[in-house]
Amino acid sequence: MHEYDQRLLAALRGTGEHPHIAAAARTLSFAGEHGALWLAAGLAGAALDKERRGAWLRGTALTAGAHLASMGIKRLVRRPRPDAEPLVRTAGRHSFPSSHATSAAAAAVAYGALRPAGARLVPPLAAAMCVSRMVVGVHYPSDVAAGAALGALTARLGTSWMQGAGAAVRTQGAGAAAALTQGAGQ
Image (tube, rainbow, N blue to C red; front, side, top):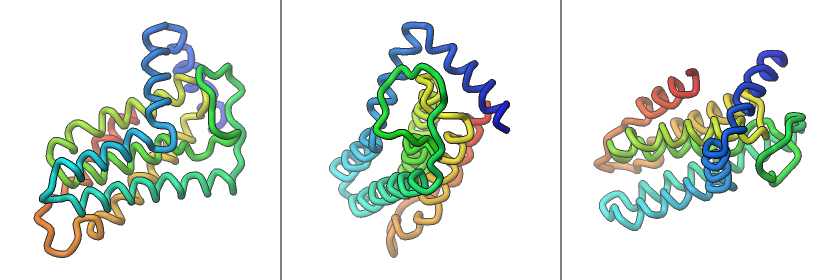
């Protein structure tokens, strides 16, 4: 597994030598720091979609909770970051699981369950966020895969709570999780 992690990381990190790819990866990494992009998206959904405001706020809470869980796991596992020249600074020394991937996958599943547009738009952005962490050289592929699995599972388990009793919300979280998983496997 370690050899596979190293080889795939080297290939993806190598794409960061292209200035446009590096800039996009840096931007995604910055936007995803501490789940900021996904939390802002959830709060924007709550502000704009009055009919589902409570569900959006609970989905945002699920995303934040998944992110916090990944930070706790990081403190327990304490896997060092890859020995690659990073394109960005990181908030900590540990890499497993990727908190960026955790919050991205949680948002994809949670917000995808709230609106059909979310099920189509969020997973590709979440997948790009996940890949960006390897392009900037701060996570192994297994860090990203574990983070995405943790985020998707956390949000999926919380979907019925997020939707609340009697909420008129279409459940598409499983479709969003499948789309994210397919995107990450390519």
